[in-house]
Image: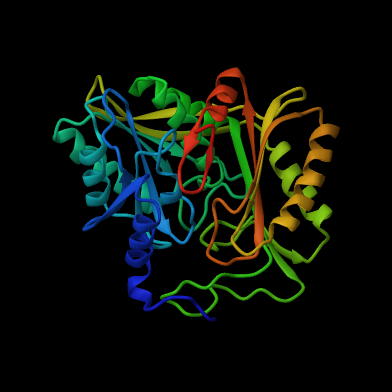
Length: 357
């Protein structure tokens, strides 16, 4: 597999350096430890929002650093969790005294390292709350998680919570809002091809010319099943119905209790979609799928939602959470209300997402 790189060991560092010179008005970078943060951070009296994860999913997360979204992003090596010192350093840089909300995808390494980073930050007097995103309906558990994986709803939470933070929500309000977004979101993805991590130099898995992986994760981890190639409409229907027919989802999460100063376990139940719900429909490229094909998927998705009595009030189509050059797509549906619509529509200015500014 050909790659437009200099050396596999330098991919993340050189990519960060490129972002810094491309967007000096929006962001700055730190190379030791690696992180991306707003050029105007910290923002006085505003809760800072941090996210992060393995590289290879660009523009997630670094492409969403800027006004109305993330204050900082912590990139790990390709498909590898960032380390606690990255999140701690990011918290120190962007915290204005109002606290930090960490938005964490449900992968074991991310969860463990963000928890440790939160403990270190709290010991240094920084208020931190971690909220988990676990919206992937494809699996109950996977190779990387205990519970559902965090995928497309991550981006939607970053945008909505970023706008709410800019509007003055305090840390607990933001945490509650982020929980609501996660509970309202469901995602499902598929792959037509594998992807090739730079350090590996070969595809992560073998997929026949007439095969697709249904329910795949963003790191190429297996999904529900491997099936024969189908038409775009058939694939879209399989993805959409997996989401819409998902029943109420109950799970336990660990969150920091500020009052007790300890980790506590919460049991949360996410309600299913129902007729007359207003939704945001997000069709995402896994990296190698052209926009024309994504609109074919969205066309069928809109028909299915109408048939199910769901009203699409907002949409997003494009390569926002990728898996290197993997061909395939994912669908995320988010149940909306007036509050979520307001913050989705609020101005945002980042390298990869911008409107209203």
